[in-house]
Amino acid sequence: MTADLFADQTPAWQEPICPGATVLRGLALAEAPAILSAIEDITRRAPFRQMDTPGGFRMSVAMSNCGPLGWVSDRQGYRYAAWDPATGEGWPEMPEGLRALARHAAASAGFAGFAPDACLINRYAAGARMSLHQDRDEQDLRAPIVSISLGLPALFLFGGPTRKDPARRIPLTHGDVVVWGGPARLHFHGVAPLKAGEHPATGPFRINLTLRQAN
Ligand code: MD6
Ligand code: FE
Image (cartoon, rainbow, N blue to C red; front, side, top):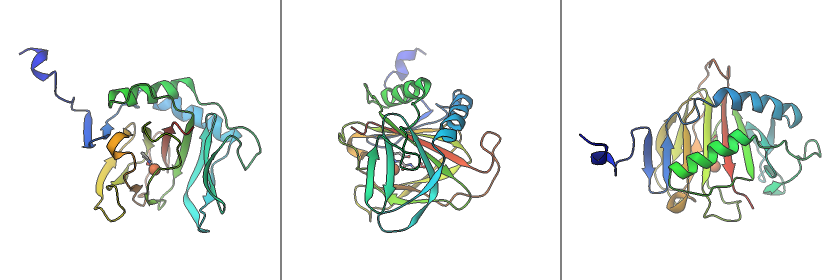
């Protein structure tokens, strides 16, 4: 056998969800300890907080950000902001290793040249969930989103271009990365309520980072 026989095949650790969306199993595993330690520094300066939706609900997921821009939500709406509304300070810097990992993940999934300027950090405790939504607050929808899962496992709900499209349930575990773009960029997605548990790296939490090119 020669390697050429497999040249057009996707490696087993890359699982296509649909055109434009791919799970990269374990791609962040080696860097998970460094990422988690960076998140401790980041969230000392920009603490996790539960934001309010424009509709007046408090989100069950606690959030922070790093990078030039951060995603925020309040009664006024969803947007990207250069300052943390909780502290009035700029968001902590995006770690170079995280930026490089996201760029590598995007390229592996077919999106070369990804240059994230925002990283949303989500922390799920038992019962926390994210209802089906589209990511559409970014300027240039040609850029993909790179999503890194750490800690407790979760069920990622992946639908289609309209809210009523049936959603697939994709288990994501520690170190998995999802890349989302092209024809899937505006597909509805969410996260099922987190099951209680204990993970050696994150204790009772799931941490998800989504890196975006927001501006
Ligand atoms: C989460 N993720 O996994 C929430 N959005 O905690 C997202 O909302 C998301 O994982 C766009 C692309 C990938 C994602
Ligand atoms: Fe999203």
